[in-house]
Image (cartoon, rainbow, N blue to C red; front, side, top):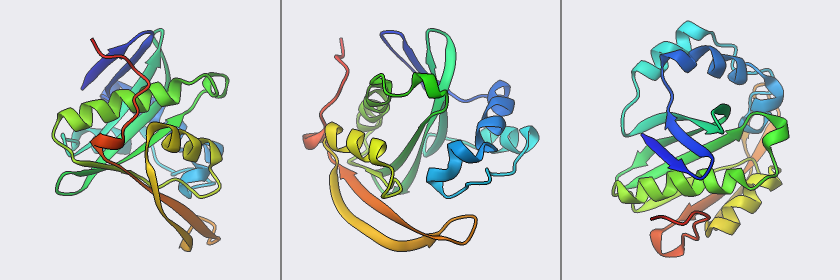
Length: 176
């Protein structure tokens, strides 16, 4: 996958990105919203193997702005025609600039073009930034699953479950 819009690029993560992804994934402050406050405790070789197994049904993407990697997006097919997605803007100074909405718009547009009929997201219920972005893009909150999972430290966590259909999608990019 290779999608460009304005100064943003969304591209497949490759073996050359394994060290960067391992560094991000091992950063507990970046990974705490996904249940890993101590990081994933992985290494470059394991990430490289994981990336080599990806396909159109399960993929990690690198988000770049003006040639600099600023974060990652991923999606996974969870049912026929349904993809679940995640995003992390990993460079703190790049947050709050509207790039997350554009990057998600780029990926969601591509997923709908690929034939997906529904996109889901399941951010931590306390992740107000991601929840706000989901709602701006047209996602519908379907449930707040209170105390539905345990993080890496064994603490109960809650998730906000969202769905997005093509009819409700409000993109933040203008396609040519």
